[in-house]
Image 1 (cartoon, rainbow, N blue to C red):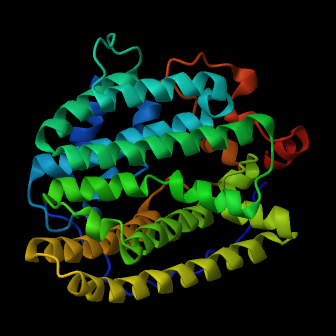
Image 2 (image 1 turned 90 degrees about the vertical axis):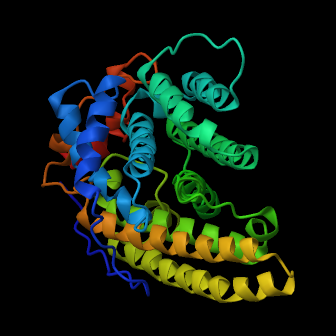
Length: 360
């Protein structure tokens, strides 16, 4: 049984994403990469990955004409997608005690900790490969910023897993905080800078207008995701979804909750546009050198393509398409984190018994 909702159109004042000339090359190469490191081991897993339309990561870098750079971006986002599946639908999202040391192992890779043992699972092996392809071609400031952002992501994922494991409802403020941190938005924006060879200096990046641009973009992206994933996640008792939290906390009907989130998205788009108008004035006031001013312009452009590209991806992605039996669209997942799969604890069964019966 599914909950019928209508997802309102989100009006974004940015040009629609266009197909990239190199787009068709990205997915086959990424699938081969995922197979090589054991992230994909079956045809069902390959089909699952195909439904993500990962070649549309090219929406985030429309002017980049380097195949290796676009491939690196696509492979990184593939790793993030697989990570999310392990959290959302495999054991890891319900076992914070086992998830925490895995996240520490990921952090150690990004820190280049000495004396690290050989990769212990496919996710570690793939992340090691990604970092070896990324770190040598980046500066220490970029690496520190990237590490800080991805570490914050891991911390938020762990907090969300504790809510799932204990079935502790989220209040609205907690959900908003976790949604912007668990959406890989700062991570993707950092990668945009990396492949475009742009460094946004701290004098710009840490300013109020730029931080407003960044976090309003994160809210728009993740709340949009919550609309598209609402039916799927409500059927399985997911807690980290703003529409679901609003429905629970405020006693709203499903469509009312969805419409409320849509209004919130419109408000955040206005915040994004206002900050975009303020940033050039700030740059002029600070008397920053021309390269910093140009980096600020590039940063706004990248965030616009991220917001628009993510929305266009949601419209094209098959990840959230489903029939009346949502369970039929779920596949058993390999344990890519080295956490023993326990059927009784899998996330696909985390909803209370009566909710699971209704979802069938």
